[in-house]
Length: 97
Image (cartoon, rainbow, N blue to C red; front, side, top):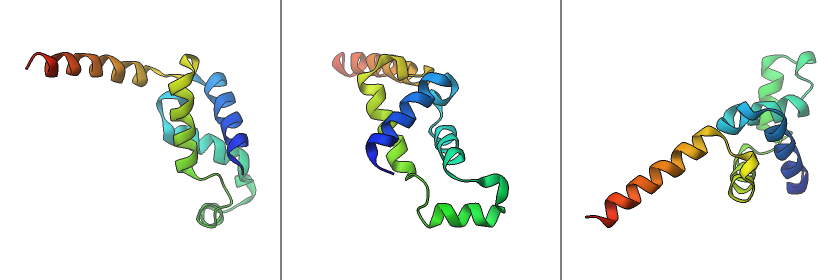
């Protein structure tokens, strides 16, 4: 899978399912569910497909989500907003030291 397809997939999923914005693990699982015919496979077969690289690399999914969050406010979840608020508070505390 190329990165352009990954970006499109991640963006569509983040827009369609806001709950995926706060969980990279759930986002990865959703993408893999679309890529693997898991209904017809045993658990071992699914794990083998993952190990053999037959699914999108989870690190590519995570990094793509991060980049989308950086440039598109609509893709950000609640955890992103909490982290940004916390960062502002911590920066203020450091400046006042």
